[in-house]
Image (cartoon, rainbow, N blue to C red; front, side, top):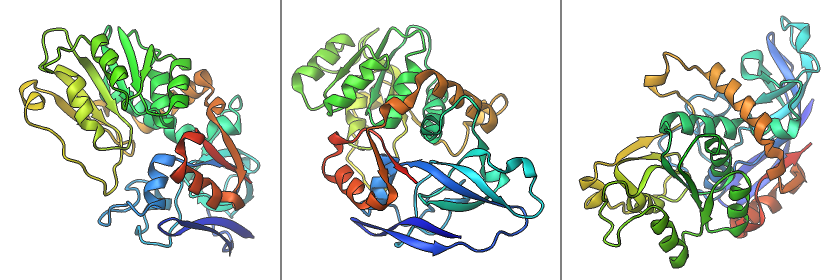
Length: 346
C-alpha cells in the first residue's frame, strides 16, 4: 500500500510524498483517510518555522512525538475508514469510521488504542472537528465560567469559535469576543456571542470597555471588568489586552500555543494590584483538580455532544485535495481572512 503524505520540508514549504507503508504487524490497523482538518493556529507555527526547539511536537500523541526538525509531518485531526486488519485485531473494526490524531495522509497505520469510532449520527466532516472541540471543552473546564459572569474570548479562529459556541450554553451575563477579521466576528455572533469587537479599532475597544464598565484609568473598581477571559488568539501580545480588560481577582485562561513567539507582558501595575489569576490550559492533560471526576473518555463524550449541537461543519470554507496543500498553506499565511476552516479530502 502506498500513501500520499504531507511533509513540511522547511519554513514556508510543504510537499506531498508518496511512501510505501510497511506490511501490517499483529495488532495494527490500516485506515484510509476520508478527510483531515488543518488546525491553522498550530500548523502555521510549523509552516513558519516558529516551533520551539526543545520540546516534542506533542507530549501525549504517539504520532507527534518525533523531534520537531524539518522535514516533518504534522496534523492531528484525521477521519477515515478501516480498510485492513493485522492479525489479532477484532474483525468488528473492519469498515468502521474512525477519528485519529494523525498527520495529514491518504492512509495511515495505527493501533486500536489510537482510533476513536465515530458515533453513527455524526458525519465525517463534523467529526473532523473533534480535536478542536475537545480543546474548547477543556478550556471551559479549566476556566470554570459561573452564573452571571462576564466572559471575553480573545481570538475567533476555529478554537475560539468552538469555545464561544460552548460558552453560549452557559447562563452568562455577557459573552463577548474579539477578532480583527470581520468574517470571524460575524460567525461568533451567529454562534451565540452577544457582541464581537475588532481589537484594532479604537472605537470598538471603547465600546467594549464601556460594556465592561471599566474606568478610563484602567484600575479596576467593584463590579467592573471581565470575570473570565480566554486568550486563544495565538498572539502573546493579546495578554496585555486581557490584563487591561480583567476585573479584580479575575481569571485569564491562556489556551494559545505561542511556539517560540514572545512578547513583553505588563505584569506590574494593575496585573499585580488586581490579583489576577493566570491559568495555563493544555488539552493533552486534565487539570489535577478535575481528575477525580473527569477523564479523557468523559471529555470526549462531551465533545461529541457539543459537535452534535453546534454542527461545526458549517464553518468549513475550503475543501481541497491534499495535492493542493501548498496553495492552502500559502493562503493561510498571506490572507488568513479568506479561510475559516480548510480540510483536505482524499
